[in-house]
Length: 395
Image 1 (tube, one colour):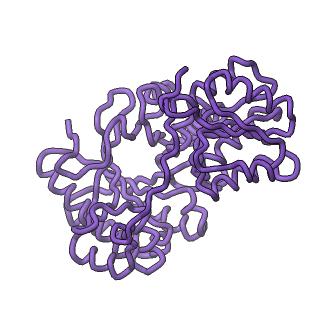
Image 2: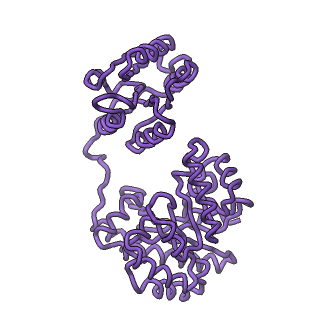
Image 3: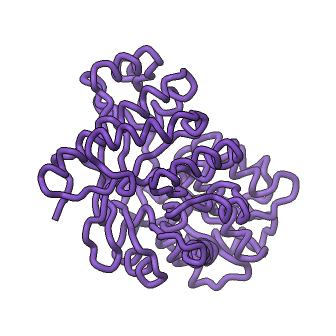
């Protein structure tokens, strides 16, 4: 396959402690139009490494500095090359190494389980031929550096009404009809545009503003539900709570008062708690969650599978819904381990009497998969992106 960049042969670097393997991979690459170099030790690799590399073939079982340490080296150096991981270890180790590389921001073009066929090697080179060469880093002017919000900025934004709720639709898997919405906080700054929650929620938690932020979003979302109800719609919304909110002993009664004051009903409100939040102080969390459930609020355990809750703690908590984390949905069709986690989570949720929601559904294939294994609801970019109340896709 011809390289899209015809000005030069795309450079590839091969690292394997077996010279015969290096020569084999290099010969195939040369025949397919690549500029290949190889080395059998890390010291030589570090000398030959450059930011211009199109691809790096990496044997995980290197002596001295092993492949995992080299992945760390590449991540620390912001490598833009596409990795091809090679190993004679079992496929589960290769999959773990792939996930580690991706978690460090690296691109993985493929994995080769030794001994591999020449056709598999050629297929990986075909992938490398189609990707773009790494672009040289561009200087960043001081004037356009990323805005770094402070507690004072966030406090002013809350007071000015610049932190607002967006609504991500939730859909019935079987009918694809809207069943409700998850409420997400968004900071719309007049000068800097939209500021993502990953940048201001940790700030709110560390600077003592999380209670004000939570109340701000809940009040606006409940006001919007009252408007929708007046229009003949029947909204069911999910509210996200910080782990710190689970320390508020007055939370169940305070939230109930807010709901009832607007003529709404607590059984139309789902409270979402991440698995990690549940574990931060289990006994205190169980106190608040049980009292919320007694007041007829729904309870959802969010991002399931990413935390460390035991099955006993899940069984003993009064949840009504389980949401499977999007990272597992994204890989369920390509990684056997992720598929097993998703299928097991659905079965577990149903055995415990919970409704199961799939997060992060982005393709029709994923939608068919979650339907096949019995998820009741789904959300994700295939179905609907977070949006303002005015743009919400009511039927």
